[in-house]
Image (tube, rainbow, N blue to C red; front, side, top):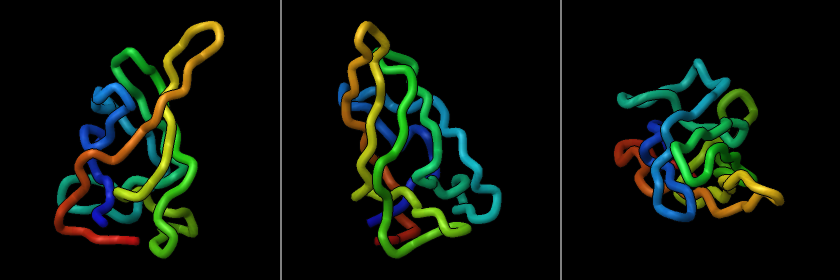
Length: 100
């Protein structure tokens, strides 16, 4: 499937798109932005606030780090006591770049 290059292509489990994606990837980009990595930290406007990835693409890497595509699994955290994890997923990938 496609890879993520924009934060708005990522959603938390309640359907809210990510507001930002902090990435160490400064080397590989698509026309719309840097390719997402499993080490990226996600920021959401609410109800969840932050998120991260557990698993990314198995064959495509940037500097030895797996990229984030439509098959990636992650979580977003709703703050509270205790914090509540909900899924984070790729809703819209870059259609011009494909990775597994």
